[in-house]
Each structure stands twice: as C-alpha cells, then as structure tokens.
Image (tube, rainbow, N blue to C red):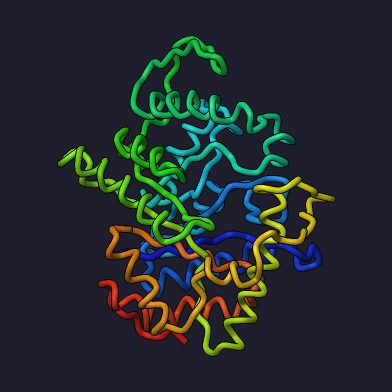
Length: 344
C-alpha cells in the first residue's frame, strides 16, 4: 500500500493570508517528496474557506517545480464547472509541465452552496458530469471531435497540443455499486468511507476488486485510493486535542456537505454536529505510530492501493511536518516502503 498526503487548505482565519496557507501546503509537498511518499493530492473548491483551491492545475505545476519525483493527484477536478474544450488543453499542458507526474481525479461536485453559486446546482451536476466526462475522454483520445449533446454542441475541433502519453483518470465515487461500474469502465477509483463502518469500507474495496478481476489483464493497472483523516499523536492528551480540532473542522465541513450551506463572506459558519465527539474519534485515524500500523493493516489487507492522508484540519504547520516525517520513518516501512533518513 502506497501513501499520499492530501494538501487540503483550511483557512478559518483570514488574517493568516492565502499566501501563507499555500506556502504551508508547498512545504508539506516538499517534505512528502523527501520522505518517499508516492503522491500528494490536491482538491478543487471555490468560494469557501475549507478545501480552498480554485486553481488545482496551476498548483500542480508549482508543486512539480519544487519537487523531484512525487506524483500529483487532483482529488478532484470538478468537471461540471469547466468547459471541456478548455480543460482538456489545460490538462495536457499540466501533464507536460509536471513531467507526466499528473493523475487526474474527477468528480461532479459535492457542496450545494458552491455548485449553486457557480451556476451548476447539484440537481443537474450528475447529468452534466456524465456528458462532460465522455467529452473529455473523446477530446484527449481523438482528433476532429464534434459534439451534439445537451450541454455541448460544436463542429469538429482538435485539442492542441495533443497528449504526449495517456493521462490517467481517477473517478471519485462512494457507493459500492458505483465503484464497480466505474472500475469496469477502466477508471482508477478514489473513495472514502466517510462515517461508514469497517464493513462499508470492505464493501467499497470488494466492489473494486470484483470488477478488476472481471476485467483481467485489461484492468491490471487500475488502482484504488482511499482517503481518511490521519495524524500521529504522542499521548492520550495529544490525541484528544487533535480529535477536538478535527471535530471543529467538520462542524464547517458538514455545514456545506450535508447541512444548510451557511456561508458569509467566504467563511463557512461552524454548526453543531449531529455526530458526537466520541463518534468523530471512531471515524478518524489519530493515534500513536504503533497503533497506526494496526489500524492501517486492514486497509492493506483488503486491497487498498493508495491511502490518502488528510492532515489539514487546524493543526500547526510544525506538527504537520513532524507527523509526515515520523509516519514515513515509523509506519510506512511496515507496508513495504523503505524508511527515509531524517532531513532535519
């Protein structure tokens, strides 16, 4: 099982400055690259102070310029918000500018506030996503593409420059049946159990494994990525402090994901959670290195290829960098990754 750091911006205080937020994320990417992580993942979100990244491909190019070999995953690019004729060309350029280290995760959008304000409400985002994905694949694979759909109509055109090599596409899906269907279509998969239990995770992985086995050699290259809040702690008090931080973070996340979407001047209003602090703790992976090895073993045994660690939920930057380094030294070697010498 390989490991990835999710570079997800959290911006609860405007006085900190967006420049400092992104500088922190770049420092995390450089640390992950030095420590031997397989990849970093970057989100796309607009108009909000959580997961704040309106320019993921620009950020991917910046990361590539400051790192040596780490892969860069968009997790995810929200297709309904883009014109595929523009995005296809941008993806080709980003793939070239990142030295072909790019993996493109795609999704339909998840936050009602964001999608409504951008003119693509969730009620139509699935339909527009499906057409957009089909068009994107055609534009990347073929020349002189014409289209006559609901959201796109145009005469033959060719995206330039042409792709140098195939750009891997990863689908963001949650339901096991959707994971099965998308795997059968040849996509890499990104998922998360969210608040689901262990059996739900096994059902998600099982759907991917079943589809991949049915594909045989054709699907041998496909991977399954799974994302969770993950952080090392040094004591019970330290763990409890970080769980409280994550609980506070999710009081904003829930507002725009499943709640009313109350946002003022770009800042998501924290709302009381339906989930208790104890339930939050059960759904996070915050523990000591030895406990972390035990907690992650079932994911590796189930068949997860890439474990994406969400580490940005309010913890200070120094602690984040320490956790990235410590995880690489004390946890990753137990999953087939070689330890990397401490870099200071």
